[in-house]
Length: 234
Image 1 (cartoon, one colour):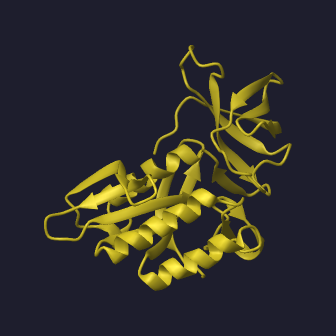
Image 2 (spheres, one colour):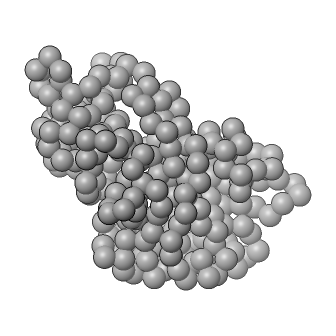
């Protein structure tokens, strides 16, 4: 996925979940949109180098959106969670995610399940069971290259796991795919210290037949690309 109209600066602070103050290289300060509803733990340290994108839409209240952050002075992370579905779809279509090849069509945001949910991607083919793909974005880097999910308690995430287990019970294929746009993360595990109920439910889902994968990314200020599988440690 190409990123254009990018500018670099330093993070002053992130606040009210959707806002961040940035100091540009020329010293100008501005408020930008933060497209991430999570805690952004370890990804929002004041003084971090960031990259923001000019939307070009003069009707927006905040013209710029925060896209990338440098973590620990050596890793890059894409904090725009709205990119995850497109990144994974692009990777499927380019043959990168080998576990999800061979489907004729991909649809997004399709209603399913018993709890008023929408699946991120629905893969369909005449000769295969339906494949329901739920995508979760992972940017919480902990010690030794471990990425943890979630970075805050997630009742919505638990609901999605229940829906995926239901799809397996109905004879379909169900996949939880961790999108990991963080160059410092080498493996993924559930964040039991943050949301133990989610971790327990994730293991139950795996035992019930939900497939769990993780894929990392190559990140530059000009492009974010899903490029390699990562281990998942349950």
